[in-house]
Image (cartoon, rainbow, N blue to C red; front, side, top):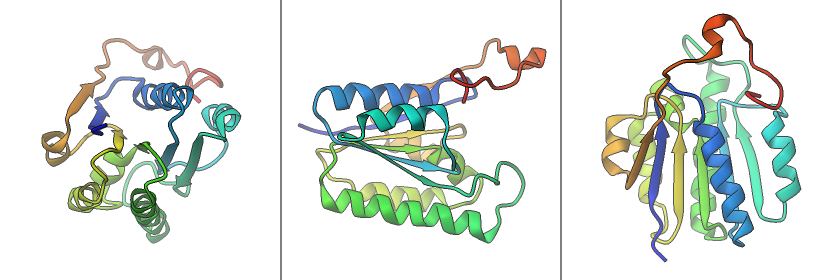
Length: 171
C-alpha cells in the first residue's frame, strides 16, 4: 500500500483533533501509529485518552511546554530537534504504518527547525508509510510536497467572546 503525505493547516480549530481521529481509525484497523507532538508537553485530555490505545498508538512529546510566541530558547530548539531525530528513527524502523507530526508546521514557522529540515526528514519516509503534519502556517514547500492538504478556516469562534479553553473540548 502506498502511503501519502497529508497536511492539516489553517487558522481554524480542529487540526490536531482530525489527526487524532485518524490515529484512532488507524488503530482500529490494526495499524501501528506514532504521534510526535512538537511544542507540547504535559498530560492533555487527548494524551490521557490515547493511553487506552497504547497497544497501537504511541505518543511522544518534544516540547518544553513554555514556548508559544516570540523567540525560542535553546531548550525549545533542542526539544524540537530531538523530535526530528526520533521520527527519523521511527521511519527507519518501519514498525509504524501511520506517523503524525503534530504542530510540525508551527515548529518550522517559529524557527524551532527549518522547513528544509522538515523536508529532509520527509525524504527519509518509507513509501508505504502515511504521514500527517498538523499546525498553522504550513510552509509552501511542505504544501507543494503534500499529497493532501486540508485548510481549517476560522469562521466564528467563541474565543472571540472570551471563552477560555475547556477541558475535554479544547484541551
